[in-house]
Image 1 (cartoon, rainbow, N blue to C red):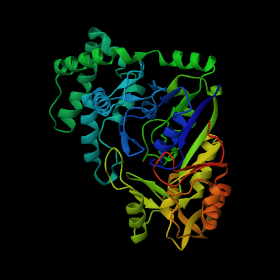
Image 2 (cartoon, rainbow, N blue to C red):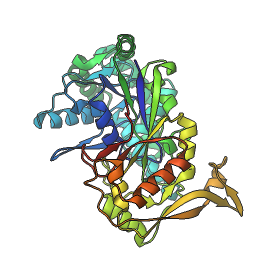
Image 3 (cartoon, one colour):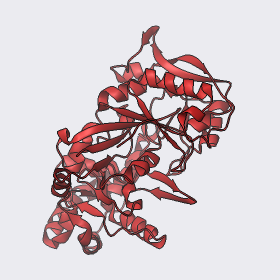
Length: 427
């Protein structure tokens, strides 16, 4: 049976939570495979709205096993706060599984993230200051601390001694900040270990056995293609691989297990943080999109930068991820426009580029080449089939589909579960 991956096809905030929740009711396992609590998913179920930061969306489906994979970095304090918040609202987390190999966000990671961003000034990347990047850096440097280390106080002490010898030097001598106390951190994280122990498992083994038994596994990333550390708009990216290739690594399954890659596209484009953004709007049109689309970060509350749909990015996402299906979200936001601009190519120093530029310099100099499609005035929120959409809205969807390079299998016309038009099955 298949493993299905859902991937953000722009800079994030495309509505992956809505797509994941829709698919999550039809699968057996939902796996978060990368990222940390620096991103979030918003899910609306009836009158209830849930903002998830560390937990996979599958936690909201009572028959699904939610899994935090080895590719995720975990802040135990944030995770427990999120679990308690859901429990208070009647959502059980007792089926949750956490990989023993997931790395832990430590207090020195958060401290270094914040001071280093301030130190960069105008060159800052735009991180959330939650310690994600420094945690991944330690993982790659092979000095990271994993979930399993909290179960052995002697190992945890040795790893903390090694880490603090280095981190405290940087905090005190480079950034003129106070150093951190080993004993305090040791006691705190041993305590977290006792709380986490019931959830910790060999998740890679469990997922592979589930696939062997014919179960369906859904792999859920945070962030998106253009924030991938290898394939995104480097250096204005995250510190992991939210593209489809990262799904197998971060979940502990083989790449041949993945049979479907669903890309999530917003009907326009947004991004949070610093970095180039060719279709960004700095006028009243951008503010109109922000207000009408409620474009504020789930985790940070930051204003999202807004712009028109970028077909060059969509084609790039299709290529990098091997996308088999697209889910187009927030089509309803565009109602009321007489004409809708769509970026079909870039002009870079007088040369037209139909594909994503090779170099950072070229992308920074890219200006959008627009085509203008007819808009519509009708409210789309009550549509329950593609045929119920206004003709111009249907034409807009079909034009974007042709430009993007993969079929559109679902269309979002509002935040609710029922406000999704399925053109073909996503599972």
